[in-house]
Image 1 (cartoon, one colour):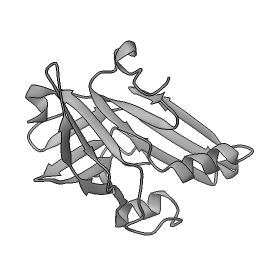
Image 2: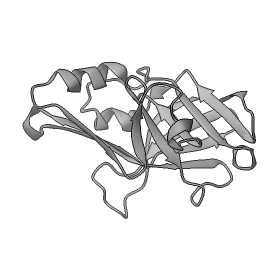
Image 3: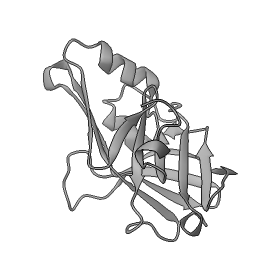
Length: 167
């Protein structure tokens, strides 16, 4: 799917994020590198992922999204799961958290990256928000097997939500 095709495929409200381009490229170059998407996540454009808006879990200060993205390689030694991200908002600061990467239901969410949220525009009953200063958290370092340090830049993110949910 090319950039901008989300609407033609019914993907109007959600989170668009490329995680970390160099990491995705690294997995693609591995002889056994694999990526999978499901449960509301789809690949869009060149290397970006789109997570569907989860209106039922969104609320004051939290924009929830659904989808399960997995990367694997090195004959099982590499496994990264980025599932059901939430944007937890405090003023203009945002923390993107994910479900426990090992899929333990009782585990707390893992803060993966932080950023500064800014309104980018909107039309037709939607608001568009984004962050271009996305950085890895201390908790996120372990998910990537200590390859990236805390504060490592990750890809910018863009969110499009219904006007009533974006406020």
